Image (cartoon, rainbow over all chains, first blue to last red; front, side, top):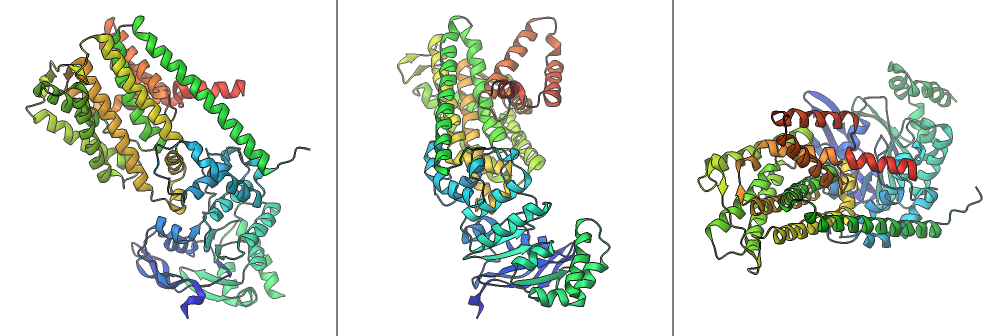
Length: 267
Length: 331
């Protein structure tokens, strides 16, 4: 039955010198779903991402991708298998043009990435596909712009396009709307929705209105462990979820979203 | 904003720009070649060869430091290995032609580079620098203790011999054009590498390593290759140098030399193609001019001062600052 799950973790644990950051997490991500991982600061969401992509080595537990155990694989190999992640802080190559950013991703499958004797012009055959991808996130006109000069929201869009260039089966998005104004958030929601067609997405997200709009299923983490799981209605009605959000003494951006969450949940 | 953004048009525009930039690059290369071909008629060839050898050394170092983002503090080991190997072979086996000795020196430095890379590449930043320094010190002590190097006295009287057994390299002009040909070949090779598909991957690793990993690149392998190519070219520089001066000495293996190549690269402009060449020219000239005059004992403090000034005020180096200036005022 594990076939219906693209990604599965079994008793995943990560300990840092006596501190348990991820505690016995069993995650099941169903094929075709947009699955959200939410929870207060320090709940271990990003750590889970780092474990899934092997940027951190799990202390215990198993990670399965399409039923196959990938726990022992290296980051780069996992990416090639089709599990591609984005980062919390926009991960672009700042001193390359937008087009080159995408091209590097496409090159990954070209087999010429060690060819130090070949002319750079040999890469031009990838430009057309790059332009398609840029166009799909509304960045075609910035193809030749150095990335460092792009606005923040555009950098994130570029990052998404770069990730899509890898043709991932499973897309791991770490807070795609972090630090964005309302207008950009709506754009990203649309982009993610588009990107999710024919794929599975697992995303960490703080903005609960984004989660409610996009996600089929939600897993709530608190203190490294799974608190509850379900669709948005179930999860947002759960008193324990409200408690971990409201009970934590956090301030700032997330704090302002919490009352909204409570209000929605109360309806 | 009536301009339309048709992807096909943008693509065409990008190709156009590539062509223009390629043309610029060719022109700059042309100027460089002409200058260097004419140079021995106005300057002393041996001094020019010294500059070219150090320029090649710095170009090699810059491939790793400026284009891959790895600071090796042990490049002297490759320079010295190239120099001693070539010197030893040419001194002891008269049947060898000069280029064979040079190739052998380069090959050994390449192998040493591979060993260094495999031992150090998993470390990041300062730890990487320290591992390469420690390994280079091991190599230094090996050369100090070995008899064939002449220890503190160095290896003297290395015969220049005949290139391909035909061209007499005792003639300074012949020697110069041979050095120049090797230098230009390597310079163009590095230029090619930097713009190649592989160069793009190196760039991405330098700018955001975690992202490069998440795009499926096994970054350590790319770094090892860059290290090995860099070590090979540094070894070649050492081999050429020992033939030019008919001398290989411990100076080349000393950590001072590893520091000096960092200085040359930074002063000239790291991560630019011409930077290390300009930097090497600058440093060799400053050293020479100062050693002739009353400031003879002040060479090191003055170079140190230049180093500090560069790091604090002109971080892009001579070529980098010029590029910035041109970009700001002309484009």
